[in-house]
Image (cartoon, rainbow, N blue to C red; front, side, top):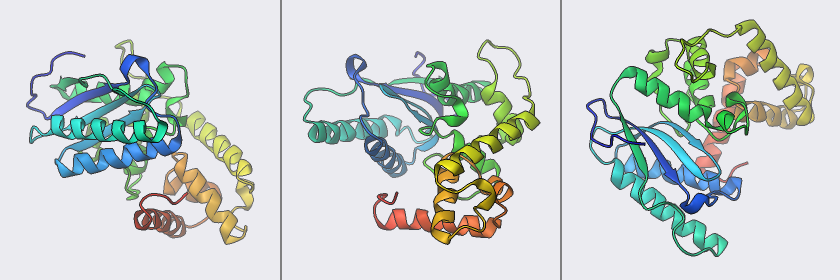
Length: 267
């Protein structure tokens, strides 16, 4: 990355790489710890996390920084995480490269491209489809467009209007990176694929999708939370299961409140 001067928009594309390509996450516990620490460091310095993606050997972010506090937030985040990671794994030495990379985003188009790049990293690397990768803010954007107030690690609200709608965001996110105009996908096909994935996920969690509504509450809640964690919005879960939106929201928020009380350790 280049162009590290301060931008008048306040938006930056930021990347932190592992030293020598070293893996910076060895487990999901590592990833959750990094996310919680990232939220804490950015909140304390009034830096807004616009988008994020955790890869094996690097972290990709879009940040909004009006107070020129991004460097302080990132230095604290990377040093603290590296110290905890090394202590936990018995590793010594630097975990991250000495300096994180950053690029100023001076136009709306550059902000949109950076968000697409962050979410598209796993697909570009051949790891997973954008909409199937669990360690990015892509699902948080879908929930934000659906007015699902479940708190994530990013705040998409400051950029939602750039994409216009859920369909616009999905179309832009899934379009090619060759500079051509993003083409609207076949939304009926996308909906069919999402419903099929929800069916498969529900069966994997032990309850076929069409009987979730009649299942015992414990089983029902497992499926609802599993679907939500996979990126399905409250309205989609309502539509696929027949369970009312208020019930789905209550179950999701109860888990979120429990996670806060226990320091994020609720599964």
